[in-house]
Image 1 (cartoon, rainbow, N blue to C red):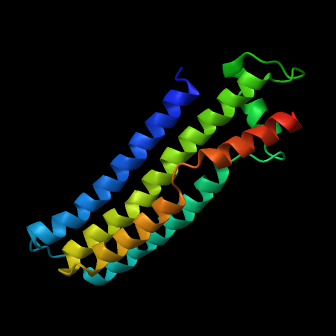
Image 2 (cartoon, rainbow, N blue to C red; image 1 turned 30 degrees about the horizontal axis):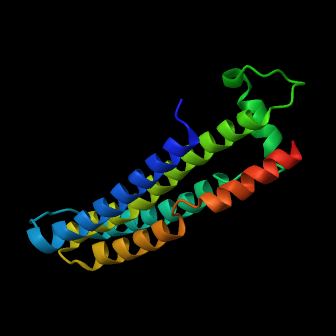
Image 3 (tube, rainbow, N blue to C red; image 1 turned 90 degrees about the vertical axis):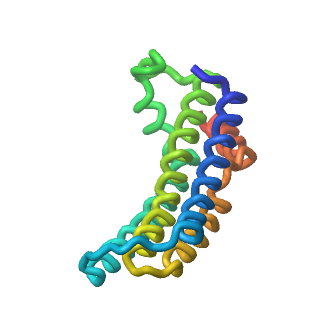
Length: 168
């Protein structure tokens, strides 16, 4: 398993790579232009716009779940028992709590960022279909704004970890 220090570094690398990939999506439209694509535009605009809204909602949901609250701790701990070797009556030690919660934070952060990135991908697709850069620009603006909101926040994680240690 990866140490928390390595995990934090890895999260920063993944986060940076996702930001760069979004800038590349913007560059595709401005450097490549628009290929001719024929589809039922009205249906695609509605469908991809709805997918963007769902991505935003899912991003916020996973972001909120990435931080642990005292009410969620028993569920998190009982769901992790097979992998930790703990038993139903056993209380986890400090290192186990840290490993479980950081693993959860790591996973949910990546899921949140991937969902956030889909917003600019939907915008890129709509830009190709509609032959305008407005959609990718809007998707990029929303996506990067959310990525800034969802950036790795280890201070907040550490506060969540301290609350978990006190409440267990």
